[in-house]
Length: 274
Image 1 (cartoon, one colour):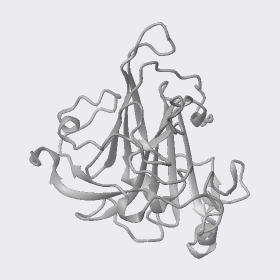
Image 2 (cartoon, helix red, strand yellow; image 1 turned 90 degrees about the vertical axis):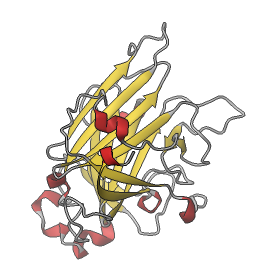
Image 3 (cartoon, rainbow, N blue to C red; image 1 turned 30 degrees about the vertical axis):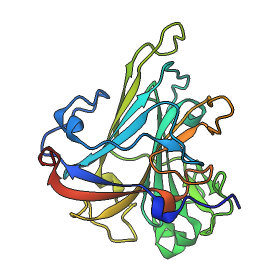
Image 4 (cartoon, one colour; image 1 turned 135 degrees about the horizontal axis):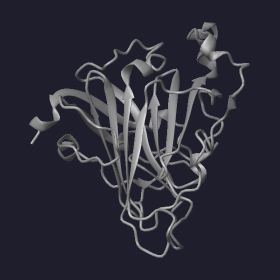
């Protein structure tokens, strides 16, 4: 097994505030609610917890229809290559979102072209116990379904997962805005922003076994992971592994839900927090 996980008492926490005005998912993050929303601290090295060499931040908002996530990504040379949905987006510079559902979790990745990749993982030990085996959508013999054992944290104490690379989040909206010129290294870019809207209706399987309400109630706490991965690393003596997150994991592995950021939902309107 890899080294020790990030200390439990140092896991980041945040509050997701409600909104009562509409958001246009265009990647610009220019609505007043995004300006009012508290941003994360600068993302830190996933393994060691050192600040990332470029600034990366995220915010979370919600209403009765959707969970909203925004990312601000500083990047002096915005690059992307992959254009096919569900290509291995982590082979480009990307940002990622994981949402834990207790007995399963969702992974989303997006690059600066706006190309997305998504997977739903069910813990093997929960497949029968949680009733997933009786749901046609989760036929483990279907194309695009295969075992998954993690990345740098193996074996996970909970065991393996079943990965559904054939699964799509229904109603998901995503958009990217590039502040600069993509794939042009002759100038200096400022970065890119990502805007997501994830309907609560699409999260029914995340709520399948733990009884959480959709949308959440005031004070409910979910676990989510917000991260950025680069195809470059800061030169030595930096120990930059090329991946940064809102809350470090202590290991080179995003698939560790017990180290995801703790997101507390508040019914307070974001415009009232001042």
